[in-house]
Image (cartoon, rainbow, N blue to C red; front, top):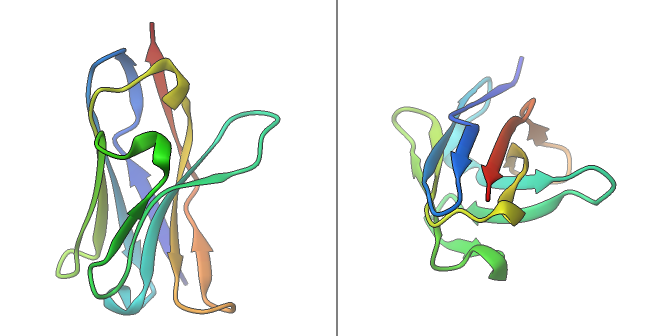
Length: 116
C-alpha cells in the first residue's frame, strides 16, 4: 500500500520560511519523480516544484529563487524549502510520486498559510 505523508505546514508571516517534508512508503522511491503541488479553493492544482530520479529539478516561475526541492533516497523523503514566503503562497500543498501513467500517487496535503 502506497503512502505519502506530508508534514511541516503551518502559519507563518510574510517573509518567513517553512520546510515541507514528504515521506514515502510502498513505492520504489528512487525511481519516482517527486513533486510538490498546491491548490487553493476554486483553482486547479498547480505544480510548484519537481525533482526527477536523476536529480533534475524544475520550478513554477512564481517560486523560482525562493523555493528549493530536494530528495533523500535513503530516507525515502522529499523536501520543499520555502523562503521569502508571500501571502499568495497560501494553499494546501500536496506531495506527488510519479513513475508512469499508472504509478501516480498523492499525499493527503498540508496547509500552508502566509499572513501579511
